[in-house]
Length: 389
Image (cartoon, rainbow, N blue to C red; front, side):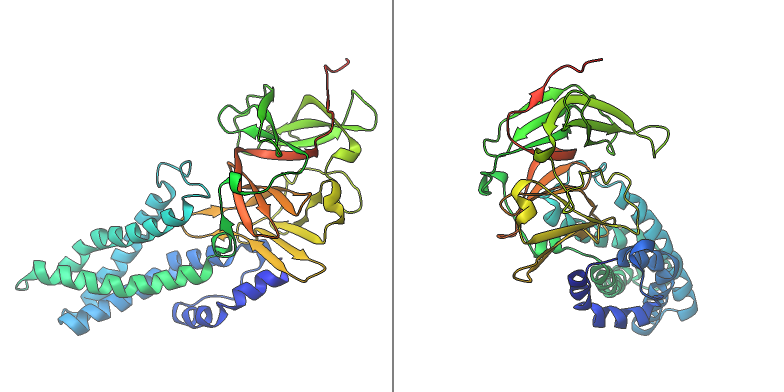
């Protein structure tokens, strides 16, 4: 379920959302385990909302321009369903996938896509508007003006509908900075699967130095790193890669031969070892493991399955809350593989390819590396040797 402070954030939008819901016909509030407000808003728009918009546009054409109401309403309902489905196909293919969108350009890209969607709607639906003026004097000029009018009115409604159902606290409640603007002095080493070659790399937070430690050649974006009891040394954990397999519940395990003492690995508050959240379910909300002195920090974090749930944290001493989430019609990023680090930092994966750091105190967030499935350990002398068969 959504955390209490997340619900408070959504309540700030509740009144206008309910007003709009009455207009378009929303069902009861969606629960976290059956989707998010944006999912419901999208489904309702695709199923029923286009009919409502088509009726509105047809009535406007009839009232303002005197075209036959019956024909205008029928034509504009058809136009809206066609443009919505064509637009949805275009949306999921823009721009050639999501590879080029990241934390640093997503916010302007979202607004560019808002404007682009409006222009596309004008172009796609204009022939239908023109058909309503068939046989009339100055049909071309009048149809262009009419199209601009009705699309502007309907787009304002659609923008409000999807804005109220979206979540953008990742950008509104934090400050996005480059990694060199964050203080990363703790002795932490991050292991991750690099985006460029699918191999395992290590990165020292206090120096920024990174190097390849294992040739993994991972290709699946769901592959990630975790820990298993070491075969090399008692009382230690070995960094392993969990790779996609035919059985989703039985990933292929590849041992990296990087061994870390138990006490230097992330722990839950009950000192249970970290396990991957690879198999998170829609109804789950995961407690976040802590590394080293983070076990004593007042900040506690949970991560949700859906992008709208994101990462939420609470300071048990001050009562302060923080919530990072992004779910819009154009960009949706789930948050996975979260580890609370010393000095009030949080390591997490944003979307499929961004390994990020959050400073809970300053609310600064930055991309650490482009990759996936990261784990973190305290940077003490690590044992790396060949496995004894």
